[in-house]
Image 1 (cartoon, rainbow, N blue to C red):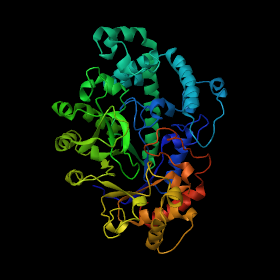
Image 2 (tube, rainbow, N blue to C red):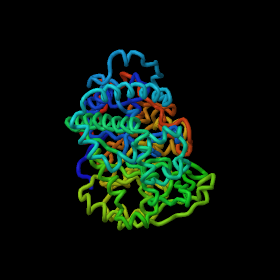
Image 3 (tube, helix red, strand yellow):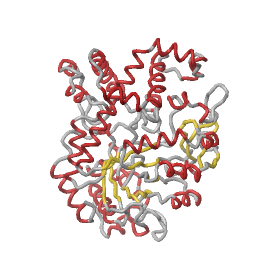
Image 4 (cartoon, rainbow, N blue to C red):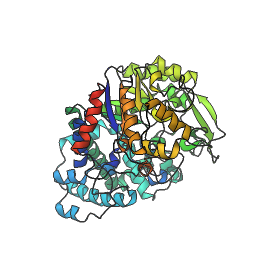
Length: 499
């Protein structure tokens, strides 16, 4: 349970300024940590850092590995600092738009730079830290490196369409591919080594300044992933290893036809027979990387929405129960003091509430949902809170607060908001008014998206659920984290005892 009043900022690493087309672990990340410190914040919440693909619109919630990091987050500037790149390598960097990620262009640019860094790394002696990383990460790194190299060899074809021996991971075929693609496999190992080396250094910098990093564990992985390829028995697949059922949610606030995510669903009976070994490795991995871990779509650990793979929408699925008591008992047996909180939005039933209460998980509440319905019963209104909560103005799936007020909120919702505030305010002031409401609540932690700190409108929205393209692109402009803004944020934070 939460014990200290505190607050933090939600902003994904990709949203940082950078001259390489996408935010990364480089100098701007350190500047942002300094801004958080100056603003009196205790948390930096990020979205999943796993490797994404264009096939799923670069959603961090549909990654090609539950363990491997995204090389797009590697900083070329830090590679230069470490002697793996030369000035001449960086001088050919193309120009990028400052306010949106261009994934294809950024991938081409950074891929070329990583190639140059890898060639230089290969030409010299390997540091001892590299060999330690390979050994410590072997369980997930070797399947991922081979999967990723083979994926390049077959030009992105789904792994179920690979030659049968490789698809089914026959020993002879794996050995043959390991020989044939040895250099590509080694490059993947190198990329992951650099990714984790840079990330750990950034996290250490944050921790030294009193900032804890909140990570995010998506409940699902992509079908076209190293995890499903290397552990097909843990998922509900057909005989030819294609998805039998896929994940999603039924119709809700975000979509009238539900959300069809398309991820393969787990075979929880098989997982239980292994004492949830794969999930235990995954949670230990994330609790090693992050100080606090958000479990995405928590209700899916109690019961999940299963849709036949042939369906085009999520409307006609069914709820399937999960052995959640056995799962969480095993989790806390292996990780007794895991710092975990539950994303329990959506259709929350009694069994989900009981699972949250049984495990004393902090829950989340979102102020965008607070100003409709009966104010005596709406769980998102602050006067109905308890302390063991994390309150958000909005999440990465919501509009920005200004965008919500201007485009999503009904006239009645706006009136209810003004009644709650006790006065009317223009749209430009609504984000900071809602930040004040969050900071002043009894919830132990308040988290605010960076877009709200900057007072941005709908164009800065990070994700629109059920929309397959155009998400995850927003970026902050250089110079927006000014000392004046940090001072304003610190005053608000201090006024409500969260500093």
